[in-house]
Length: 264
Length: 89
Ligand SMILES: Nc1ncnc2c1ncn2[C@@H]1O[C@H](COP(=O)(O)OP(=O)(O)OP(=O)(O)O)[C@@H](O)[C@H]1O
Ligand SMILES: [Mg+2]
Image 1 (cartoon, protein in one colour):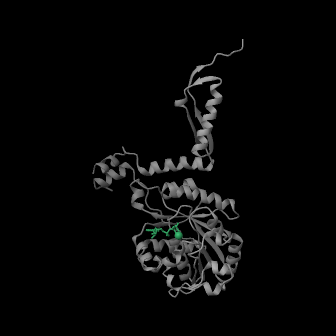
Image 2: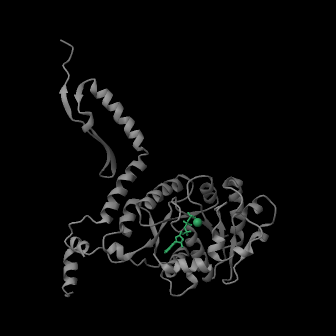
Image 3: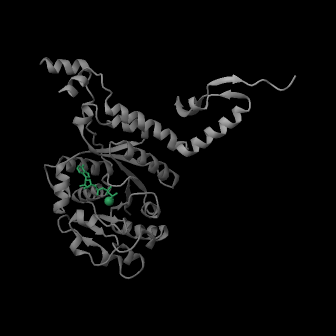
């Protein structure tokens, strides 16, 4: 029996879909069977990020409504053994599915896969409730910005108010250099206000744009820094104890002066 | 370059600090589920009640939620202009 994780955020565009694509690919590369579920009904994206958009015949709503078997709607990723995608419907809206149907669907998927990763839509409406319905664990994605962290706080509260345990946190698009210069909130700044366990930190990485252009998750590319972070996060999800590298904190005046004058 | 110098000598408040402070305050309000408009109403009603007993400087009133050691306090600063004479003998 597998485990279902929902990747959520509140604020849109912080990297949920990127996270689902990369974690799923990394988990499958480690020998797990993985299904990625696009629960963003009406605004499907995961198929494109995964580069599987041309192979869609049926979607999640077709399965739920009984137009096809689950097996028929699953798209097998030919690059990585054991990795499948269940695409969202593009022409339906979020109310086409209800939480009870999602619970049944995710249960069925858990019987066939080690990990079920659910890509949650932005917002806190029906689509969010659907995405949460069948999951055992939630991962909240944020970026180091006031608005994203604020929404993450709200989502953490909503996840806790549902039956799920306190979510873990992924901080995406971190720029160590900006933190160092005092122009971005640090990991500690964010953890201090949110008070949740940190699952991982993903750096800002131009390669994410390239990988999205190509439809190839960054974890498939050995030189992508974000890809490396996602591999570590996948290991942590598998229960391995992989330390989170913490970038150097903001330097004090003395350090800066010393550096300026060449002494160390 | 000027930017670099002011930062070097720490005169400029860094945006990281500004972000932290703004986040802290907005979360206090979010978590207490009190929106700015509700705070506005609260302020109006407080003014109405207190004005029955004393003359207050309405424009200078400050009402804020702030965090005091892990808990949230409603802090009001209400400058009094004049105490009203009691009608009773
Ligand atoms: N670490 C990163 N470095 C650089 N770009 C990134 C990173 N993570 C995400 N992005 C970019 O940010 C954009 C939004 O990412 P993504 O689609 O994963 O967010 P989302 O949370 O799923 O959005 P939505 O709420 O619309 O579903 C994309 O263009 C993606 O390429
Ligand atoms: Mg998305």
